[in-house]
Image (tube, rainbow, N blue to C red; front, side, top):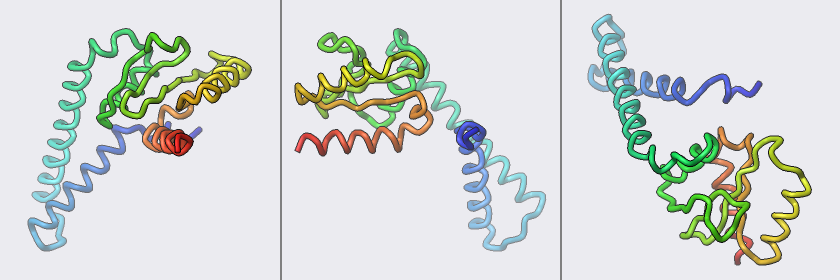
Length: 164
């Protein structure tokens, strides 16, 4: 089992926020003594930062609910990622039936391949047709959904290098 699946994003955010709280308390006191009062302030700051993050997520989900209504969970994760990176996209463009997203700023398509939901022959056939027509394509697999920051950026750069 991967460590990234054991430690989810909320846990990671909580740890980061607690460390930030400790840092702020140490800066405010200029001495490294952790008293009960200081620990209380640390918890208050960490809890406040966590609450702000949760409210931001709630607002984002509620605001974008209509936008992701017709998407499966994997597509909505990708859409959420693209929105977070301020990348404009078109979901299920009419011009291509096999693709999930079109990114007009980059003039490329994104295909999500679910585990077991496709044959290797179909994937190679789709990829070959995109290569033939010199259309840029970024493929996202189910294993990549947990690390879209790294995988998507890497594949996007690779696809844009092909254009040159």
